[in-house]
Length: 66
Image (tube, rainbow, N blue to C red; front, side):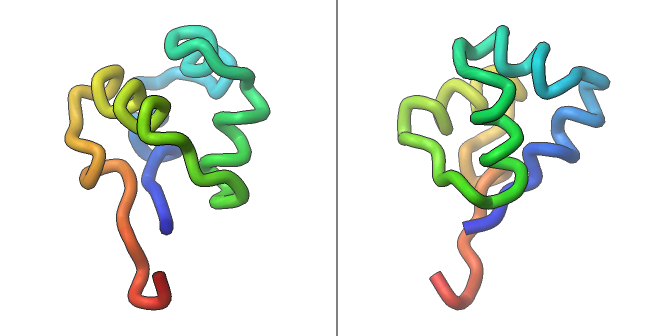
């Protein structure tokens, strides 16, 4: 699974720390998601979706290998 979380953050011009504080996780969690080292829980994916006002599928997407 891939994501465009970094792009969405850039559009809103916020740091990983600011995003983390807004949704209640650590900056390291945001970093790990952006680097595709961590797959977020459904709850976290939904929180990100609400924060960016995008569907989950607009932020996270499957690769052919998934």
